[in-house]
Amino acid sequence: MKRTEFLSTLGIGIAAACTGCLAACGKGGEGDPGGGGIAPPVPPAGINFTLDLNTDIKSVGESKTTNGVIVVRLAASNEIASFTAVQVACTHEGTAIGFNGAQGNFVCPNHGSIFTPAGVVTQGPAVINLKKYTIAIASNVLTVTG
Ligand code: FES
Image 1 (tube, rainbow, N blue to C red):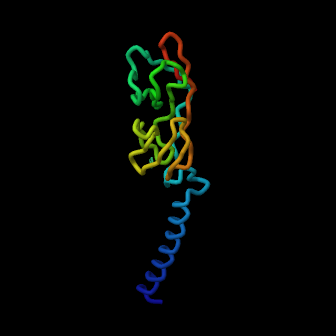
Image 2: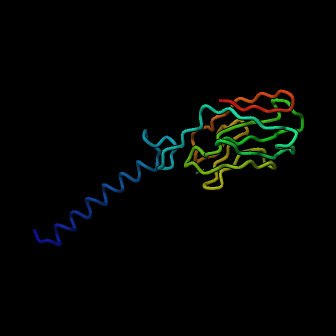
């Protein structure tokens, strides 16, 4: 076999192998649960911080990110149901999500994944829900744990 013939054969073999790999990667296999070819971020754990509702996130739709957690005011009253707290890193490839007040959901600016205020995926490419954190409120101090 001539050298050029050998390299040609090798090239076809590598191309076939790479095609198979790319097809597997794009489907989000067992080692790729985020579906983006990059392992999804590990949500922050051991979270415990407070916000002063006299000064923080006073307007509906306003948010504040602390320790990898985004807290959003969903309604005017200072009760637990008026807030949500989820991991800020998108479960697809880790880009910081933002809250779209007009649509009432979280949107990832990188590839367009959408999550409900509770962190549930409603549009991919993300396939994993955001981690939701526990909120408590006492004397206008909001505490996030989880
Ligand atoms: S990083 Fe891809 S949708 Fe968020």
